[in-house]
Length: 285
Length: 291
Image (cartoon, rainbow over all chains, first blue to last red):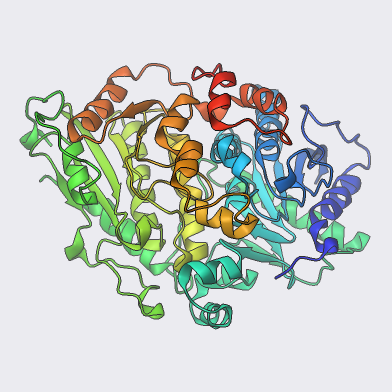
């Protein structure tokens, strides 16, 4: 799918809508640390408590040419790590830890020679570390997928959430590699990949397939993903608030993505491995 | 475990140089563990293979390319997770991913019960398996989560020997390890050279230019920049010895994934439009990373 420019700014649309909605009665905090213009970070009210909203957006003026279109590059990833860590520090001795909301619509990780040289893998790992550490420290971490959730970028910004929500919209896609590149690596035509995705669920780019695999906690329908009304924004905010409450009610120390037996096909292999390995773990030689 | 307890042999008893890279994953795990202590969990006879590869006309492997072995390191209970680079480029699918996650979570459970298990990851992987895309991606996220929790209690030691290297989501796993050991033959990067060439064009990176590729993501360069801790020769004894030394060092671990200010400063001090070459970067990014 070739993203339209409009689609490329979904993260900003939802960041501004949710932060503005939350700004009633509470001031939107300035960015906590010096971060690039492509990283949006604000504290705003969610369900009556302050929450930190984070989004990565395009920055046509970025000095990193490979990270101008909303990709997560080295600056964005280290910036995410800094912004999340600042919340962990600020709430270290607080009675409650503020929720972190990752608004996900990224064009993927930055594919560049310079990025590799500078260790973009470590930058993304730092963002993963920050989100996972926040979860371990008691922060409810929730991801809201409003557009493209792609590969390494999704790992760094979204997949460490204890709860993942997504808009049920054709522009909401999850994938590991763009179709053309995947076709090249797998030596199959794009059309064949697309038809494979219909039967092989994990190969599907459709967000509904992700829900069927048990990897999504909520698919929110009836929302205009690109021009949401005030009422639609309010509905999404309510869903986020509910997700925060669920995260607080459950164990925060790891992602609750262990498939249950009644869950759909695709999770049984994971379950079989978990059972068998746990049984064998302590066996003597 | 007491039945297997035996005196530790510091370097695993290796005398002559023996290539580690040439070994398959199972033998690599054996080479890391104290002699005679290797036993495999979920071996091929458990017949837990990928349900998704067959649907795509690909013959699965009964261990799904991930070896999980228990045994001892310096006499201490350990788990070695070895990825088989020769099966689907060491890629992480649902079954292999669940094997890794479960092993790390069981190691965490044991550590929480004051029965620490030493975890070692032998990374040889192109990343998420494209044939099991989203399930592989979710598994990699779980592996990362498990390491962040586990390394607070016990060092997690990673090894990248080569020749596949360590790419994609698994490069983040390498970056999260408490200690990362590499050889000169190893490569560590988020995007493989072929992917960069495809996405950004051959003028960005010529994937066939091995010298350039290794100068950017080769083990020696990663070590020089402080993105890997130990640079060792392709030798079983040296690699097993470096793993043992990493656990002996222990102490208060400093994780490079938390050196946020250092790296933000380093990156903001560069001019991306006049990028440094790999050699020059070594001069301005010292190995020692202030946390």
